[in-house]
Amino acid sequence: MQKEEENSFVRLIWDFRGPDGLKTAEHHAIHLREFFEKEGLKELKVDCSTPSELNSTAFAEVPMERMIEFRDALKPNRGEYVE
Image (cartoon, rainbow, N blue to C red; front, side, top):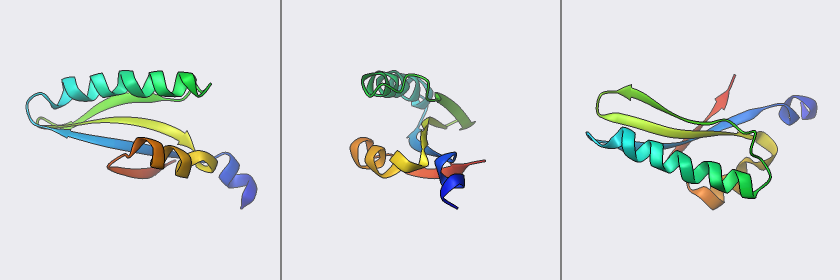
C-alpha cells in the first residue's frame, strides 16, 4: 500500500459558478501555478474545466503524500482521487 500511495495523486478542486465562472477559474489557475512554482513543483498539472454552462472549476493534481499540506494552505472546495 505504501508504494501505491507514493505514486497516487489527488485532484484539489475549486468551484466557480455563474456566467463569469470560467474566467474566474482561469484566473485562479494562474495563482495556483505561481504557488506550485514557488514550491518547486512547476510540473504539477493545473488546469480548468467547465462541467456545465454555469459551473467551472480550477484544479491541481498533487501527490498524495503532500495532499494535507496543500489542502490546508490552499483551501479547495473538494478533492478526488486521480486514476
